[in-house]
Image (cartoon, rainbow, N blue to C red; front, side, top):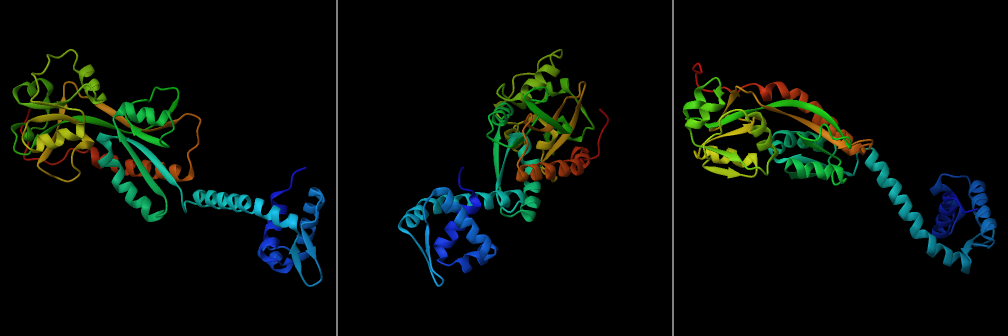
Length: 312
């Protein structure tokens, strides 16, 4: 038989307080119950741990050695249990979220703000990468879950769709196409444009959808991340095709115009390892993110106001 944690905790408390009465009060036990635990431990170990009189209690030499050996272990275990309880009650802990670059600014800041108001001691970590890197981070356990637009068919993942997001044409506010209700893809050939490189999964989606259309002219600039395109458009270097949620939340010098023939979209969702439960902090954040996305989906995907439109 091995000593129980209750017996060891009783021994450590009596040894530190040098008093059965004080130890019983600290452990919320009666003195007879505490004495039984100490006697049970001594009987199991086959040694006397305390010298007792009617007026005092003192550790034996073996008791002093044993206290030095087990006190740290009991304290570490108590600390681990307390930390686990804090995490379960969202009084501490952390959550790590993977997120593709093109969705970070739209989804995460408002949810982090409200989540921190409710759980200020929970640390939120973000791994912002391209779609493939974020997918790998989930599979390797580097993050609790991720916001991504690939992986929905992966058997190792559970994918929960949040919203379907169309690709739009990002234009400077004064650009001729910014006044249009919609733009056909072939019309982009008449204007300078920037695009993402093959390092972005967004480029793959677009190329596959436009496989039967004539290729667009050589771009003026090519970048790795969709979010970089917004800055290029804002500085008047050309127009660019971007997922709608990458557009600034408030009206700025960059406007989004729907693209048609064909319409292209991607599905943003939450992915996590199949068969794995989320920690309390991660589950709470995922739920907050899901609820915020549902509230925001309709307004976020509603076309932004532009100048009076002309028919395309």
